[in-house]
Image (cartoon, rainbow, N blue to C red; front, top):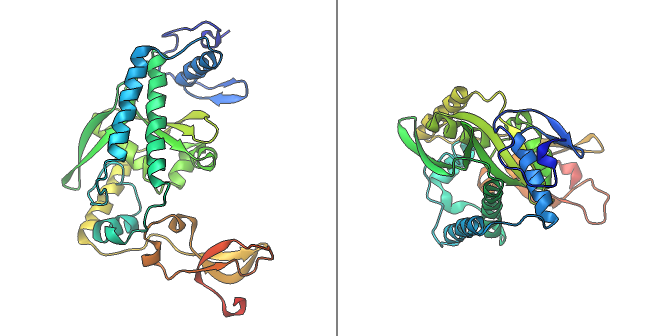
Length: 311
């Protein structure tokens, strides 16, 4: 029997960074730390183990720092390049640089969202400490890109590799974070470039992402297998140089609407643009109930063009 799954607590029994795959009660695990944390959580849930006072105090300190940062009242719209934003689409960065004041007002729950993300990260790191997993804690790093210094704070390092911790919706957990390939394909928050910058700045390998489902509490590790750090950062530098020229360029196209797999003649915002805070200034949007829907309460669609026959 694997020592990590024994009912008594075991410490330092897995070599961190040695990747393998294992099914545990139907859960596919790729990283040995997943096994250690799963074993620890099961023991905590049964009451056999609790947080030590030292780790509780460390967790409370991290949460206090998050509260002070997230509820500081400081306007965070001032633009500068950071490792957390260099991977975002060019058009979004252009608006943030030139017209931050026209962004959509944050929803009432946005500040909760930011704090919950910080709290999930703090708890995850607290569990690592409680499981006696040795890791390098958050550090500020600086990297020169496109002739300027870009600052970031990575989450943790494990056995010579930089990892990031992300909280996610169930949809993002299962779809976007299904694999590195799926994340890279739909990475409008710039997570891949962010990790590449952390790795380059520290001289360590790009490890991957620890992802926690905010709804179910499930967690997993998504390794950055195949990430070309140099190529990723070359793309970032090209985008930064283009932003220096300050010419707006839209990065996405609207898309054809279909109803029961048949084109309606309408066009609507693509999924990515639908989440952008600047969409009302980038597109001429008309918000209407789905024109061909037969539902009693049709879904509201953000149209960029409505065929006259559908009016």
